[in-house]
Amino acid sequence: MITPPSPRGSERPDGSSVQIGALVPLTRPGWVEAGRHLLAGLELAVREVNDAGGIFGRPLELVVRDTAADPQRAAAAVDELARLGVAALAGEYHSVVARAAAARADALGLPFLCSSAVLDALTEQPTEWVARLAPAQSHGWQIYADFLLSAGHSRIAVAAEPSVYWASGTRILRDHLAPRGGTVIELDMRALAPAAVCDELVDHRATALLLLVGHPEPAVPIVKSVRRDQRLAGIMIGAPAGQPEFAEWATLLGDDGTAIPFLRYLPERLSPLGARVETALCERLAEAPSFVAFEGYDTVAVLADVLRSHGPDRARTAESWPRVAVESTRGQIRFSRTPGISVWQWAWTPVQVVDRDPAEPDRFRILHAG
Image (cartoon, rainbow, N blue to C red):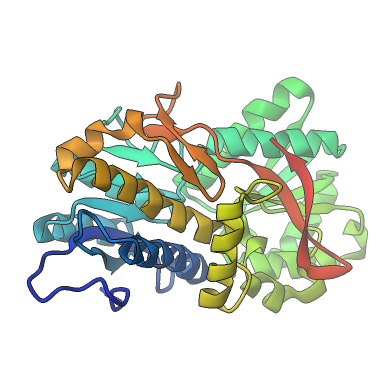
């Protein structure tokens, strides 16, 4: 497991730092670029907490573990971090991985503030130990479905790989669209090559194709195949999971990667705090920060507030979720019990449907908000 150096100024030779375990995908097959942005946000917030005096004068320290998008590896990391005495867990991007981490944290009595994963059923049973910043998948993907209908799309194909996350997304779309006259056509990417997807889209008369697949493979080859098929010149490609958010998408696809709507969790205008953090993240990343970087920053902001109020006691941290009220980069964070959601949930972070502007691929256009 990779353990990057802790942020400067967060170590003490006497071991008196307050430690937070950070779960981040930093190697393949994890979404490495998302992991890099998540870690940048976590580290920036830790540095600012320490510059402001830490936790009761003790420095805050990240203990980072690479999950590599592997649920078993994540569960083992939770066990290790619990033994090391971390006060809480933070992070994780991949929903299936976060679910494994949340189950283990719940079993061990270790508070876990999940930054980015959206799967509704993050734990099988309701738990007091886990809270989440990202919106539940059912909330965000229903907003995406409303966008599809408003844009005139009622025959929607999904190119899907086998995964609890992708299956959940397909079900949410179908359940939301069907009563409104929409049809969801499922294309099993275990059986289809990217070029064969084009024939299926023509046969089914689909007007939109959603990529419910991994990045860069097979998402990038699918986009290239569809863009080059003259029969599909009018089809919309969408990626609700957010693949086009990151610079690698634009690098690999160029103009082909524009006009592909996806979900991101940012307000239309950042608060003064958000604008300041955006500038700092730009410097740290040497590129524009994604919403995932803001999720990382806000995660530490919440945990630092809780730790300042109650100290690094795990049970008291878990008990404090319903009393959190933190001004974050994207609005005031409060946690509540939301129907159908098994963890403490921020309901809701701002949700946007955006795409890359064909005229200026580094600029994002807001197409819909919910």
